[in-house]
Amino acid sequence: MTIKEIQDEIVDEFSMFDDWMQRYEYIIELGKSLPLIDEQYKTEDNIIKGCQSKVWVHGEQNDDKVVFTADSDAILTKGIIAILIRAFSNQKASDILDANTDFIDEIGLKEHLSPTRANGLVSMIKQIKMYALAFSVKKI
Amino acid sequence: MLDIQKIRADFPILTQKVNGKQLVYFDNGATSQKPKVVIDAITKYYEEINANIHRGVHTLSQLATDAYEVSRGKIQNHINAKFPYEVIFTSGTTHSINAIANGFASILKVGDEVLVSALEHHSNIVPWQMLCEKTGAKLVVIPMNDEGELIISEFDKLLSDKTKVVTVNHISNALGTLNPIKYIIDKAHEVGAAVLIDGAQAVPHLKPDVQELDCDFYVFSGHKICGPTGVGILYGKEEWLRKLPPYQGGGEMIATVSFEKTTYADLPHKFEAGTPNIAGGIVLGTAIDYLNEIGFENIQAYEHELLEYGTKRLLEIEGLKIFGTAKEKTSVISFNIEGIHPYDIGTIIDKLGIAVRTGHHCAQPIMDFYQIPGTIRASFAFYNTKEEIDTFVEAVKKAKMMLS
Image (tube, rainbow over the protein chains, first blue to last red):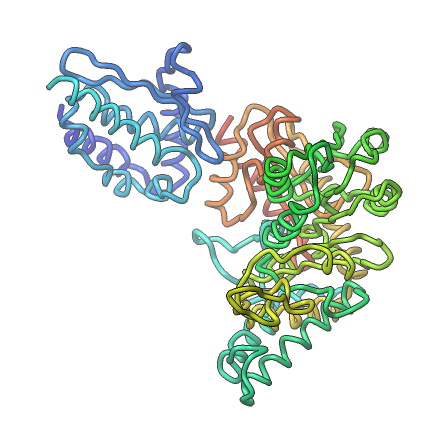
């Protein structure tokens, strides 16, 4: 599936929920089910320091795809990471670079990706794009 | 006794709905809300007497200057400073501390020591660290215990003739601990050290008497005491303010300027370079009048009731731990729930209309001491109610249920 298709699928899933509580409960579930980042990558280098919650992200190349793993110490942040990983992991570097995160707005989580929200997610997306950029340059 | 409903009616923002819920504002440690008299005074200043001060001969400039100086006098009275020129307007606590720390750059030498406490806000750590880097002086930390109190016997041991500055907050922002500053000031003076008291978290709850305390500097922000943001106070004893060089150069702080030499203006203008926050300065006086009308004794008694009630209610929640259990503390409750990140709780209860602070509260050393990423901090003001505490406790319970 393309990034756009996955994003549409996520938007579809979230449209079932009537209120914020259901959405948040789902995000918490996603956070709990996120495959954890390998301990060896949970390093100081891979840590993104939001003011409040910490985010670790690691990217590696698998054939022509970029695979991401990530983690956070806060469960809501982790849940949103799970959504982002689902959309961006296992995709071509060039597609990751072209993709946007508008779907987060559509599922009612826009405020979590606000640059003023001190949770590390904005920096995480930047980091995902940086990995994609690095891998796409390497290919050439 | 306070008529809380009458007081609440003074604060327009308290009727706001947030995320569809009635706002419960428990982030007073970060900034207080503003009563209508303060909001109106800002408008009135700009509508009626806005002009630059200490410069013009025209009527408006005189009116604005008079209002600004009247406010200085109110603040002088409020903190019982000996002279009005010992009260310097700044942009806030951070600015005040930086002004003093910079001033000491010309005084400190290699081997001198600056004592800070383990309970400080970053703004009372970093300027002194910068000073130490510049001068070769050493930053020495007064340790704290598990209750969040300073270990005074250790402070006694750390004091020596090397100690040149002691800088401590009156009340800890992260934990609410009320520090024994009178003892600290007297002891520090015995070795000839200057003492700065960061009063940012104290002035909303009490009326400091700088002469009785005998502190050399007392600093605070206007926005935490119902005043506007961008204005604060640096109180300094006359002898110190004369001794320290100015922090910023510019207009208003000079007596004469030529390219060869500039002589500085007298106090307080020496430390007030540039056009200040005139409206802010004037309105800070209005805010202080408002608080004094309610009365700090009343405020303290009522806030203590809120603290006791809030503590009792929160401790009903299983797995909840309060950080900062000092014998002497103000209406701040910093806590965590076992196994749940404070950010998650803050986010969920925000959806329920509740405003609290989560995170390290700009006091990372305290969080490191407890080995936690942060806490949830509820800080109550005199316009909060027990009913709001009930709503808050229910919200925390709901968040706990969702998150565990």
